[in-house]
Image 1 (tube, helix red, strand yellow):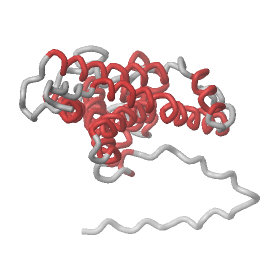
Image 2 (tube, rainbow, N blue to C red):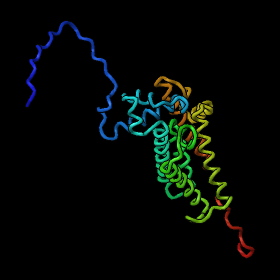
Image 3 (cartoon, one colour):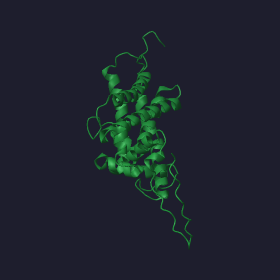
Length: 267
């Protein structure tokens, strides 16, 4: 049987101006499929960028996402599960950035690898929280995981294939020590460059690069105002274009195999 209807009360008469209703954070049931997972990952990225892995907590991620403290654990199990998922996602994004670099470079092996390097650093600057987490499997709250290893290997293979093309090494052929040296040297340059930019060590160089390029002065990379943030972003773009790009181009061309020496009968 249907429950009897309750008599409804007459609406209260409005008197004067009402205070605006305070907007609350979205409740968990306000998210549709997959949206909560993305919100938790985005909150984790922002928290890592601000505080690093030492300042990370599931409770703070839940608070920023507007959900109960138990919600992240429901999706990821624990803090390590969430951080491992973010690190895996980071490697997938890095692989996509490297492949996009290949596309920009066209058919020239030097240009393809150069654009890979620029894409690598651009990814790090866009996702500093994820970038600081990616290479910490087994430490820093990131567990060793098959999915994480697969994603990391896939990203590394894009770089390795680029070096193979540059050096004329056939797919599947074993890499010789000289090939590994070229591969690790290329990786080390862009990885170290990214970390130094994120640490603010290149701010002064970025300002000089902007002035040389006629782009005006740059604010500090840690500036909070919209203008300072825009100037910092522009400074980094100039730093990549005017400093890193020619640096990589010079390094990669130095790795090219030497042309065969002319034979005694050739003119």
